[in-house]
Image (tube, rainbow, N blue to C red; front, side, top):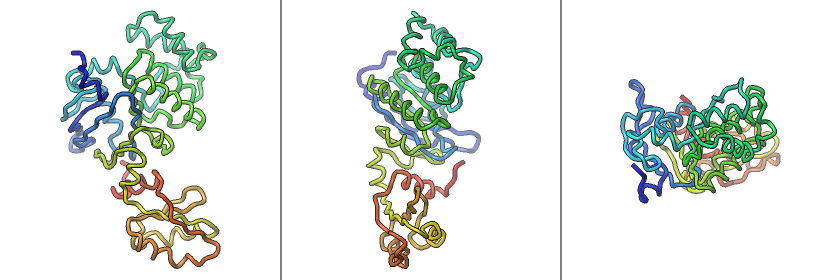
Length: 313
C-alpha cells in the first residue's frame, strides 16, 4: 500500500491510541495528528506514557485499541512498512561499543540492506561531523559523540520520521544545542520529528508540544498557546529573604505552587485576588521586590504536575 496524497498531510494521524499492562492503563485513548516536516515535543513526568506511545507508533509495541496511520500506513497492520521508514533513538545508547563509529554505521547499513554502503556511510560521517573520529571505538566516546553516532545510525536509511526518546539526557549543554540544530536541519528537509524530553529549553524549540500525564494528554499546542490556555497567574519575589518566604507562602489560599528559578521565587495560582492577599504582608519589605510576570513554560508544567498529584510514576 502506498500512502495517498491525503494521508501524506500528516506523518502521524492516530485516534484512540490505548495500551494496558494488566489493570494499569499506560496510554488512555489519546489522539495525535502530526503534520509532515514538523518537530513535536512529548513532555510529562516519568511513567506518564511517552515512551509507550512512541513504541506503539513505530510498531515495537502492539496497541490494545486505536486506529489511524503513521507515514500513511495503518499503524496496527503495517508496522513493518513503518519501521522501514522510521528512525528510532532510544533513551540509552544501543550500539556496539567494541566497534568503531564507521563499523557501527556499516553494520546498520547491512541490516537495512542498503546499497552503495561505503558512499552512504562516508556521506553520513561527513554530514554529522564524524569523519575525524570514524575509527574511534564507540565505547570510548563522550555522551555527546555517542548521541551524534546514534543520530547518524537512525538517519542512515533516509527515514521520513524520527522518534527520539529523551535523546539528550546526560549530555552537556553545547552538545544538546548542536543536536537540536541538526534536528531542525533534518526537519527542514521534510523529516518529521517526535521527541520526548524533560528540558524546557528543548520543548520551546518544538513547533508543538504535547504534555502527557498518567496516560492522558493534558495540554497540547504551541508554547504560547499552552501558557495562555493555562490560566496561570505568576508573581516573582526577588531579594534577601525570598528563600525564607517560600515556606510561609506554601499552602496559603490561592497559592497553587511556589518554586525557585535561579534567584527568583515564582508564586503561582489562578485567583489574582488570593495571590495578592498572600503577598500583601511582604510588599513593604524593602529587601524584597515583588512583580507580576508572564508564567514560563516550566511554571505551567509544574502546575500540570501538581494538578495530577505530583505523581511521577
